[in-house]
Image (tube, rainbow, N blue to C red; front, side, top):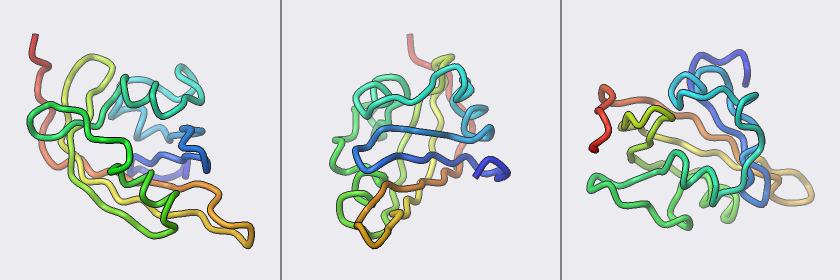
Length: 121
C-alpha cells in the first residue's frame, strides 16, 4: 500500500485508522507519522467525510464501515477536509480484508474528482 500513488487508508475491524500512505497524506495535508492511529470519531472530526451541503456523513454509511461490517465492497462520493481546511471532492472504494476468522478490517482508495475548494470561514 505504501508504494501506491493513489491515496489509500487501512482500518482495523473496529474502524481504527491504522495506516494511510504518502499519497493520502498529501491529500489530507498531514503524514501518517504525524497523526498516528486514530479512532473513527477522531478521524471523522479531523477530515470528514461530508456531504455536498457540508454536513457530516453518518458513520454507518461510510464505505470503510460498510466494508468492515458487511464483508462486501462499498463505494461513495463525498467531500473530505485537509489539515489546512481545503475541501476535496473524492470517490472512495473500500474492500474488506477477510480471513478465515472473519473481517479483519478494510482498505479504501480515494480518487479526487474536483479541485480543492478553500474552506469557508
